[in-house]
Image: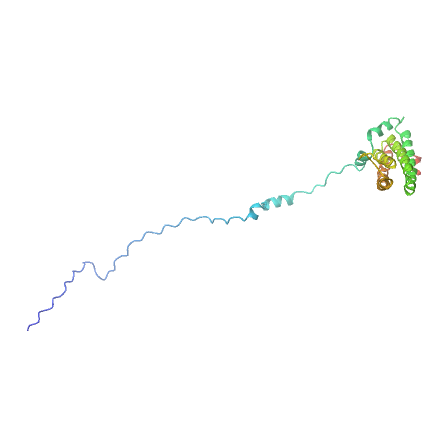
Length: 218
């Protein structure tokens, strides 16, 4: 039996292009650069958002600012305003006949002597718990202080006068002797300090306005 010939598969004709020449790669467009974004700052914490902001410029400006000393008032002016009634003192000065201030200076030094004696007697009366005596002495020194314009000593002596009478005028109440003595004790220390300030100011004033007289030698 005769074998039929095997039919060859049909092969498509080759392209006229040279099979050895590789085909050019397809053109690929250049990649478009992605837009650049600024990094998003991290959110501030609550503590950071409430904290005051400061810059180095502010710190530099503060560091460069010169340190200025506070203006100082004359040493005698605060004492005059708080211890001496200047208007009353000027009225006393008007009694002087010349710039030596002999008359008013004599009044001042007489006051110094009275105050020293009165404070000694006040200490003795306080030790003896003699309230009527304390009241009398307070009344006496109150008047002498008012005449010269020594206002703070005047006010403190008026309080001693009232406490010695078993009376608290500030609170409008009556006092028992122990309570009155308890109030007078610290008041005595305070009035002595107020007097010392007034005496120093007055002596300084007379030293600057005509000199000190023989009374200052005492």
